[in-house]
Length: 327
Length: 87
Image 1 (cartoon, chains in turn brown, orange):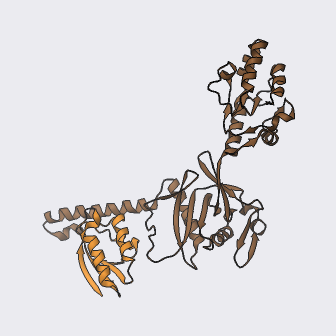
Image 2 (image 1 turned 90 degrees about the vertical axis):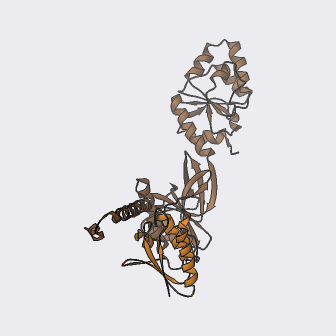
Image 3 (image 1 turned 60 degrees about the horizontal axis):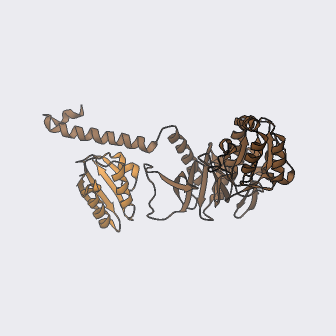
């Protein structure tokens, strides 16, 4: 399970979430290992049997008002019970202030108290988005990712099949490159997002030439930091008698991190212009997404013609002169 | 060269699925393969060609194969059509 320290969270988000630290800096050493946020209402009232203590705890106006209503004795015992669980940190929203004893207690029990100037709902939203991003499922695969007519196209296939060459041709035609060779996939908010697995910039290795810097060579508009993946195209060596999709009535899917992505298996032979086919596949996907499926359309027309012919054939024996049917 | 007349048996005719099966079977062979319906002759290894025939149930086609394995090709295609593409 992934984790992030409260310190790293605080340092990276103190500006965006208008955070400040109330307790001593030493309290920041705990780890966050849950992608969720909790409002500890009932826990403060003393009910700790069911308490998501591994989550970041957000104290909004409800919690603060409730704590203020308690006697000092109750306040201390309740807060001690809550702070003795393994909560990573507490964030107080709206810049509200906690009773001073809670601050002493937090320092004593090594719990970080943070204050945010954001409204509770905004803070919860930002926290959820941030944590989901941090804790998103991730894997790195051998592939090339491009933006073709706005669709994210993931090119896969064995080493040497021509993924990079195809990508270069597509970039040359005005499409943009996300990454070559190593792509890190992340599953966030029901979509699969890919970015380059290397952090050196948009380099490509072209066999026979060597390394090429796509951003320098083609310009900043031909590269992208990340892209949602819409279609995977698996390049495979051309073989006789291979079972290719001929019509497009059946759809295949590949699965990455539990997310299903349409996949096309594309046979490649030397000299074949793969990038044009990739462009066509991307445009066909766009047409499908707006509701037009060429394979279905053709099949519908074909079925209608077969039906008409069958009907004509069944009425023909009733006519006196078969030639009249043609009129 | 072998020529063979054959009648489509399955109720829905040569729609997408049977056409795909027919073409898939035909491409396994090295012989040239054409299908004739009245005045139209199409390449039996091209899915678009086969579908354009729009051969309904009862349509009469002529299978024309030419090459080293023409007899095997005609046998397999005939069998597919005779069995109505398992429909």
